[in-house]
Length: 121
Image 1: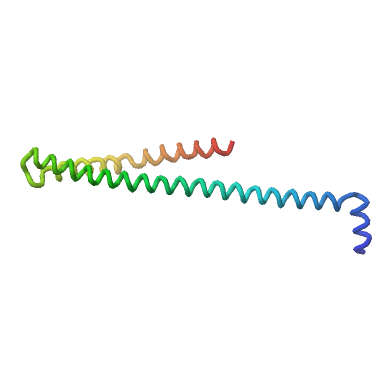
Image 2: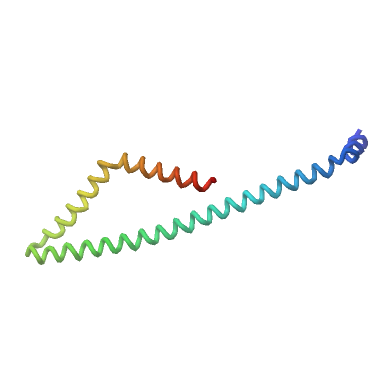
């Protein structure tokens, strides 16, 4: 039975077709693997860069805030006035983010969806 099957495949040239098809599928799978690796590497590299930028930005903001608060203390001749003013500014910004977080969330979601749609095309 196996010999007849092999003869029919050779007669209809299906054995080459099956070999080519399996080779094509293996190649496409390898291509997808490489594309996924490239995407992961790109995302990880961007994440590392953003984490480093966030870290240095955070350090800058902290030291700048302390310096500005100290300057305001000297200007108002008080020991804590500058720190209260700077913390009030941050508190106000925090409250604004809490109040408008839903609209900001929807805006960011819309922008990310647009970015992913552009990438697919």
